[in-house]
Length: 116
Image (tube, rainbow, N blue to C red; front, top):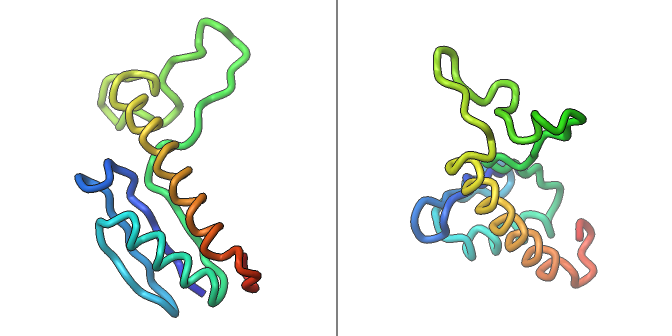
């Protein structure tokens, strides 16, 4: 069993990853991450987490569609909507990095390996 986390950021700037278990590794190169996690996935189960805002609230009140999510502002901090600059940027960055990640291990494992 392997457990990995990818800290979403701009590849080559502030992207990072780490894995513990049967296979270990860490670094900041997205292609090494993809290769290492694909190898681990071919050899057994892999639990993978992403450090990035990857959800948006689904609301019924149109006046609240873009307000801050519950828990977004820290204690004593002003409320900022998830759709403000930092939140929107990290959400979009997360979407493209996660899409890149899932495309590549899937093709690396598509050779009929057990966990593909």
